[in-house]
Image (cartoon, rainbow, N blue to C red; front, side):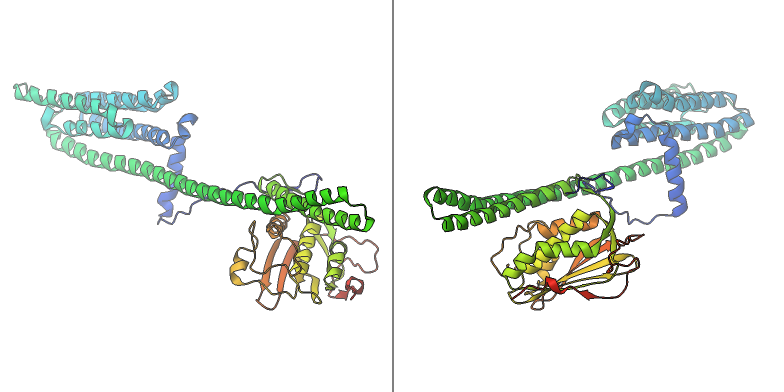
Length: 495
């Protein structure tokens, strides 16, 4: 891992964002968003953290704005026709409604604000009933809307009490008329048809806007619920994957660590009883080999863990691709010689990538070692590096059995076991290509595989090209990538 100063860090998690495929009218959608932002400025922050509290707080502020708007219109109308009692009641009711959002801010209580709002409506509509003809006026119909508002704002338990109160208030008006105390309008009777028409039409509009506000809140709450369910499903999927990975890890620990430990313990017992230097040397080499295998497994596990937790830091700098490929080949030369596998290498002049040197070398080492593992003896592994417009492309091709379509779909996943097996009995943890993919993406690069069963496999690595390639003075390097393909013969394994 690179311990240099961080310039890029892999994200530790992915945030799910569900798609909204519903039909939307752009103008109305824009207005609704602006209106909601206006409402949210009047809502205490603690009410915006919970969907139900947010819904009720928005309703309170929305009803407050709606009540004031209706109150101004009706008060002006009543003053115009000389209905001064009605104008006074409406202005008093509008003042109480306007104070409701302030009361919510002051008391930090949805219940206090909601109950005050419903109380204001009840008293206001009851007062209008008394000055507009009782059961013969339109105000009684407005009083009927109070229980609905209380249900929307306060919930079933508290709304039940307001249903009873509204029922009693309407009952008082009706009983006064039944007792012969006819309630007469306090304005000129000639305006009664117009007042009734304005009252009933206004009630229709009020109930429509009330339903609109409620439906908007319900839609937002439903969308949040859907998002929460989607996130829950994604979390369950992640937990299931983590559980499967845990089971895979337990299997690796039981097999890939237990078996080498058994070999080491057995060799240790033999070395305590044998004095032959030749036998001791072979036992020492065997012990070293299995210890290296265990070290590589633990290193891979630590690498994957660091990457997935966002702790792996990538240090981007200009990298000489030729030098890194040659280093990767040197690291794998011994393994190639043992299997009589040749390297055929072609590298364009002056290839510089903007990447992490250690990460690129780790990727190349993994790709080359994998090509050797799955190649039969006496074949060739081909490594080519070429420039593209904004990338350096490195191809690593083997002449092995290839990878079938089913294996290609899970190729870069953790703990993947391919149908094809290493040709020389080499071990595989199923982690190498998963690490390669994450490292490539961390450097803004990519990796993919092209393979046909029976025709070998080609892994294609793309890395961002360096903006200003450096000239090291090596005669083989130029500042501008060219098209020359140079074969490096001394990397061909000897027979």
